[in-house]
Image (cartoon, rainbow, N blue to C red):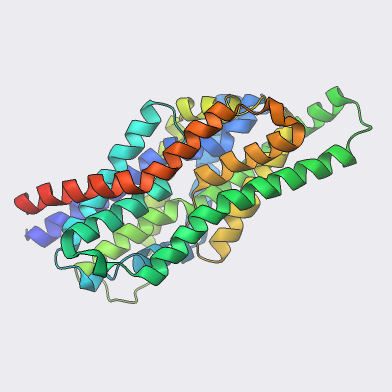
Length: 333
C-alpha cells in the first residue's frame, strides 16, 4: 500500500470523525431551543435532528465545491495530503476542547482556519486563494449580523401579531409549531455543515490525483458524511444545548419559533449561494436578536460576550494549531 493511499485513507477517516464530532457539537444548536422550551423531549429532538441533518446533507453539494476550490488550490500544494490531514486534526482538537467547556464555537471557523494555517505552513501565504478565502470570511462575518437583525425583526412582528392573544395558549400552540421549525432548522444545518467535510475529502482526492480537478462530489462521500453527522447528532451535545438553550436568554416557545425560523432562513440562504457559514454563529445570533427584541435586559450578555470572544479567536488559534500539527506530521510523512 502506497504512502499516498495511506494518507488519503487517514484523511477520509479524519473527515468522517470531524463530521461525527460536528454532529454532537454544532447540531446541538439546531435543537437547543426546542429542548429548552420542552416542545420536544431530548431524545425526540436528537433523533429528529439526526434524520433531518442526514436528509439535508444529501440534498446539496454547492458548499462542498466552494470549500474544495476557494481556500487553496489543491494542485499548488507540494504535500497536499499532509496539509489536509493536519487541518482535520487541528479542527477536531479545537471542537473537542470547546465542546468539553460547553462553548458553542464554530466548526466552520475551525476547519477553514485549519486548512489555511496548514497550507501556509507548507507553502507560505501565497498559496491561499485570497479572493475565495475573503469571500468565505465575509460570509462568516456577515451571517451572524444578518441573523441578529432577522431575529430582531421576526420577533418584533410576532409581538405585534400576537399581542392580544392569551400568553399561555399562544405558547402552547407555538410549542407544536416549534417541532416543525426545529426540523426545518436541522435540515438547513445539514445542507451547509456536512458539506464542509465533503469538500475536505474531495480536496484530498483531487490533490492526490484520485479525482480530476473539476470533479463533482462523489456520492459515496456525500452518503458517508451525511451518515457520520447523523450518527454524531444521535449521540447528543448536552453541554452545547444547555448553553444555547438556556444561558443566552430564557426561551419560551414563541421565542424559539422566531429563533428557529431565523436560523433556518439565513443558513439555507447561504447554502443556496454556495457559501459556507457558521451555523453556530447564525443560530446563537438569531437567539440574541430575538432576545433583544423581547427584552434587552433579559439577554445574558456575559454568555454572549464569551461566545463572541471564542468566535474571534477560533480562526487564528486553529490556524496556529494546524501549522504545528503540519510540521510534526511532515517529519513522519
